[in-house]
View 1 (tube, rainbow, N blue to C red):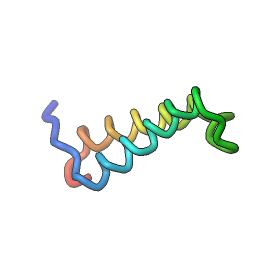
View 2 (cartoon, helix red, strand yellow):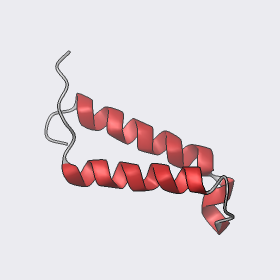
View 3 (spheres, helix red, strand yellow):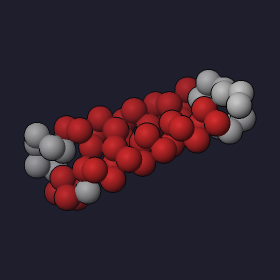
Length: 56
């Protein structure tokens, strides 16, 4: 399987969503704190898809 580097915008979005999920464990953010696990999971899946699919 050939992997590709994710585009800069996709990588930046995934990092922001992931960091938001991690920070929500320490600081109460109204919607994010209740769904912190899913924020980190979505960020990981987004990065995995971006490396697996060409042009993303």
